[in-house]
Length: 199
Length: 230
Image 1 (cartoon, rainbow over the protein chains, first blue to last red):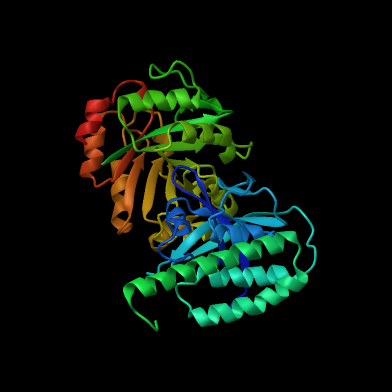
Image 2: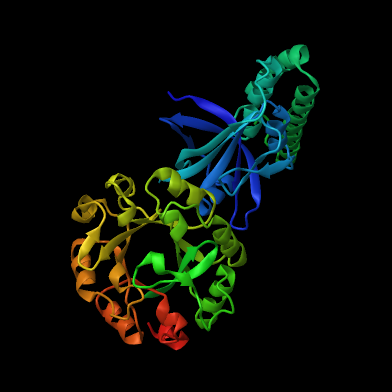
């Protein structure tokens, strides 16, 4: 088992245009492994430009936003790599790919830390932030998980958010709940139109 | 065979190679460019032929007197399709990452800049870097273990004969053949002494995948039609 840290990973395409995506960084030695799924923009970008910035932020709106079509967050240039970092983040690391372990579905990009910096203090744990991260993982896998399981899990997390969220956490949570409801509504109407009751 | 033009950067300007003696380098004067500004020189080179790769030696970085990153960034911004091979004297992973991470090109690891074979060994069979085997006269420059262990080499190798850089003596075909014989599976690029189209033909016949050219381009001894036919 390996330690995984949830980060906002920023890569760039051949034109230098940035792409933000929530991704789990897998710890390996002194470096990190990026394992984006195929197909994804992060994967395409790493093939063309072998470097990235991983942002460690407690602003969970960025995680929820990236999964619900809200990818425009303020950016600022990084220090050594030609990709930007989040303008507001507790810390960030700048990664350079040193090798690729090929895999059809999930190639693993082995990265070295070329630079790291802290920008703001850690504020302490917040259960609503953790709940939003869990909710974001669920929403990123709606097409893979049974609906009943997702709904039960969201209902459980909803209680935690209700008890411990600040405004940013509450806003993020609503984005995620709306997205799940939309996807399920589309699924319902497709089921009715397609005549597959019970599936 | 691929022809790769070479520029040497010092203090933000392109300087002219003089038989590998770096202390005597002066700003480049070339009919291809009105000034020694790197962007102007590269633009001039590209009027001869649409080169896909440019070799850049960052002499300040190699001599550990700062670097020419601002000039590299300007070339990258002006000619985004041009691949750059950059020798910045890298002797550790941090110096390689600085180039790769800044999107400035493929690092060239010069044997003369290495203390041991460690950095080379970390890139066995890789296309992430290019290894330059540097010779001055008959003497290999750098740790002997690099020359002795072809199994550690990356996919692309430059055979750099420094005494012939800018000397008009012609390429060192014997050295090329010697390296080619031990570097199985590698692509070999010749550097140093290329005078004219006949030299390019000779290198091609000797099995070179490419040749690095500088002086002959500025002196008009190699022109666009020579490059189309190789």
